[in-house]
Amino acid sequence: MTATEIPTPHGPARVSLHSADQGVAALLLGHGAGGGIDAPDLVAVARAARAVDVHVALVEQPYRVAGRKAPAPAKQLDAAWLAVAAHLAETTFEGLPLVFGGRSSGARVACRTAGAGGADAVLCLAFPEHPPGRPEKSRQAELDAVEVPTLVVQGERDPFGRPQPGPHHEIVTVAGDHSLKADLDAVSRAASEWLGRVLRPLVA
Image (tube, rainbow, N blue to C red; front, side):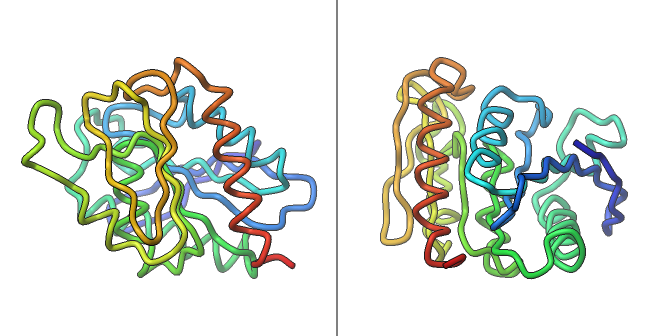
C-alpha cells in the first residue's frame, strides 16, 4: 500500500493505493460523510477486489485530509473526486477500466460523477436512499441517473432506507444496518462476484 496526495480544486485529497498482482481494472472507493477509508466494509471490498485482480484506490476527501469532521458541500465533493479520478486515469490506471464506488456519502458521489468521470461501472455500499425517518427526501434519482452497470449492497435494517432496483442497477441485501459490519463475508462475495461479471467483457 502506498499513500499519496493529489491536488483538487478544494485542497489535496489523499489516495491509498492497493495494487493487485496484474490489475485488469481499477476501483476507486470513497468514504462516508463522517467516517474514513478504514470503514470495515471498505476494507473488505478492497480486499475482495484485489483478489479478483482489480487495483484499489481508497480516496480521502480534502475536508478529511484537512482534519475537518463536517463534510464539504456536494459540489465540492464531486469536483474533488473528479480531479482525483482524472489524475489516476492519466497516470497510475492509464488504459484500465474504471469502477467508481464508495460507502454512504461516497456512494452518492460515485453515482453523481460516473458520467462526467467516464466510469465503466459503479459500486455502492450502503447507499443512503433517504435521511433516517425522512423517506420523502429520496435520493433515488442520483442512482437512477447512472447509465453504467451498478451494484448496491444494502443492509436489511438500514435506517437510511433501501433504494429501488432499475435497468442499470441491482440491489443485494445483506444482514445488518448502515455499517454493513454484520456480514462482511456477504459484502465481499457480492462485490467480487459482481466485479468479475461486469468487468469480464471489458477486459476480454
